[in-house]
Each structure stands twice: as structure tokens, then as C-alpha cells.
Image 1 (cartoon, rainbow, N blue to C red):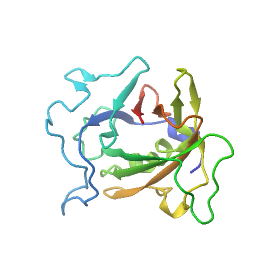
Image 2: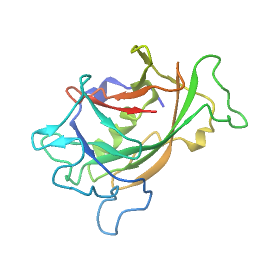
Image 3: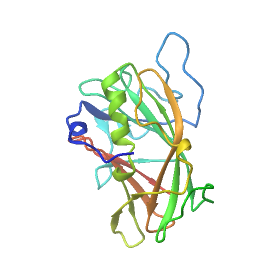
Image 4: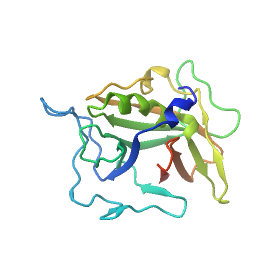
Length: 201
């Protein structure tokens, strides 16, 4: 994946949050694919009637397997243009592929990610700039936030695509290298006022 370009910052994205268990099934015929619906669709987990609840860092706190995503500015999470994603699992220091290379310092994290795009082609295309190794960081036990780096341990064929199309589902991994084997993983977006997400692992 490449570092985010300036074009990504000119965004029409806003946050959404919803809760669901892992699932990679395709969407029903005739409509855009989507991750499983939340049990309480009127007020998804982490949101109130006034919008998403963020922590002191301005992030939405997520559990592994819980949905996050983006949708067109001025529209809600039920918009047909919405894009949802979830980090279902995080492997710490896995065995590298045949041609892979473990980092000299730090720890490899393999993020197992699934994505469902809506019918907004522009938002789908911008997602590669959100799910980018360089947007991740780790908050260690000392409370210091340190940026992640792209890793070279896993087979590149397992990665998410460089480009996402509308009305499709994807499943793949994002590989990053962080200083500590456990902590808080954060993902920020280049989108103004969009905040970000975080997971404890």
C-alpha cells in the first residue's frame, strides 16, 4: 500500500459504527453487499441519538469483529453509498511466508480485515487510503503513541486490494510493525473531522 495522497484528504466521508459478528458471506442479489446487521439498528453500539460517542482521543473504541466504516457526508450509515469494514483478528508475530522477512526490531501484526462497499464508487476507491499501514499507530504501556510501519513478513497475495470497487465484498490482511506485542491499536483517517478508531489487542 502507498502512503495517503493529498487527494484522499478532500473527502466526503464521515464515521459510522455498528456491531456485528464476523461474516464473509456475499450480500443478497439485487442490493449492495453488507456486513451483518446490528441487533439494534436504530442506535448502533457506540452511538447515541446525537452521533458517535468518542473517547478522549476522539476515537471510536471497537472490539475485534465489530464494524466501523464511512458514509457520504450528510447521509447516515444506512446510505447505499456506505462502506463498512471490520478487523476480525490480529495475529502477533506469526511465522513468515517463504519469502517473507521478520522485522529487525518491533513486532509484526497481521490484521484480518473484511470490507463491504456500497454503491458510491468514489468512497469505495478512497478506502485504500484509509486501510493503509501508515494510518495505524500503537499506544504502548507507557502511554506513548508510536506510528506503525509496513511489514514484509506475510505473502503479499493475502493483502487487501489496492483499489476497491462499488457493491463488493473483500477479505484480506493488512500487515504492520509496531514496537510492542500488545497495546492499543489506533487507525486515523486523513479526512477532516473524521476522527478514527481503536482496538485493544
